[in-house]
Length: 109
Image (cartoon, rainbow, N blue to C red):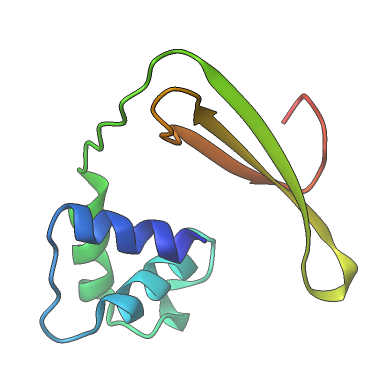
């Protein structure tokens, strides 16, 4: 899911990589942002940091009206672990200003 968000952001700022495909860059950035060591990504360090800096300055404007609906979905991943995807959606515009993934179903998260 994080890879897809990165691909959307790359398309939003019209970022077209020269030497690597957008999917490879998005996958490497998602792995790096998820806590994987930068040595384990498929990109050189300089390339990874270049695209990380390019995407860190995006100001993505989401039209919101102030009327929200919150939805949570329980998903099962490998070996029976469950995670919850929380999505906040604007009722009038349909925009998604916030989402998160948690391992527990609790109001604290």
